[in-house]
Image 1: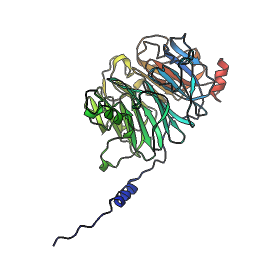
Image 2: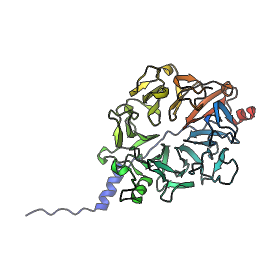
Image 3: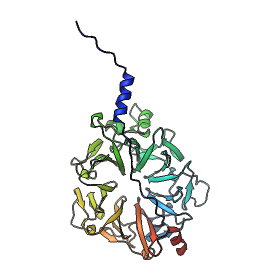
Image 4: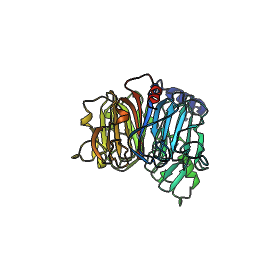
Length: 437
């Protein structure tokens, strides 16, 4: 006689399973916001992204941006700029055609060309920006975003209603501890070590859809239902058997990086046509995959643009991988496309504390406060006073940098934002700004 099968309370079993696998992040490394500074800008300013007013279309050297706030962090979007103040306020300026500034500028003279405060319900502790969107992580773990995402078909909107021109809570019922923005997607890390994404997924950057499911092709019978799936934040698609949790995230223009908690393993997804995410295969990777190349090192920062990546190790060394054109790798005139992470040797004897990559540019800040730039310089975004491409890291000089120490840099489409303190007075950026007024 066959033995009777025991009945199982599925809800109890599921509760026990969740309880056993629950993981909580004890610490997350956010961009440092304890040091106040003043802002320098360079590059294209035709839509107000330099914040210098409607008469300034371009600057070829770093120029002081006079603000009424002490700034602790900066972020350059595609054609707009975001600053975080000491007291947790968000300032924006630049192109607002699709709502990237998060404030009303219609009917207000020159409102896009000067910094304005974004109204948010609590103090902001981290900012991020993409081509046409901005996001803010609040001190209570909520995330507000505004603007839009775009794909190969055009404007996706940020919700099914379309563009969001004012801040709205983009991910709910989650305690978010870090955010990162790609060109048209946002990555979220919650307090349980889970990675969530939303936005455009055409290059695989969301890490949770198949190639077929990543497009919102208008001929697809799914229609708005498919767009809704892309715009609604959801977790990375990972095998449950891996039992992975993450403690850091970075977003490239068309890719996502996630660091496994308490390990050096880096999982990647997204565009890899120039090996910029460290996989041997070329093309797009639509589901998260371990990158042996990026798992070799302990990373402080990973900055990935469309076709190249600049990354900074915890001990201050800079590596490059991807496409060589315009000198964006910083490996010299004789280099080829880098299919593996390659150290930028001209910076090998320096300790670097911050890096950034724009569309075709790269930057590094040393512990001494020197700023180096390389890559495309056609709009003055390198701040070198010329519009020539630069094939190797070159020290950026100028009147505004004569007595300043740079500690952060962020490069956008064709403009660059620099955060400094005075070398003569390290107390705060407000003092330095007043001395220059």
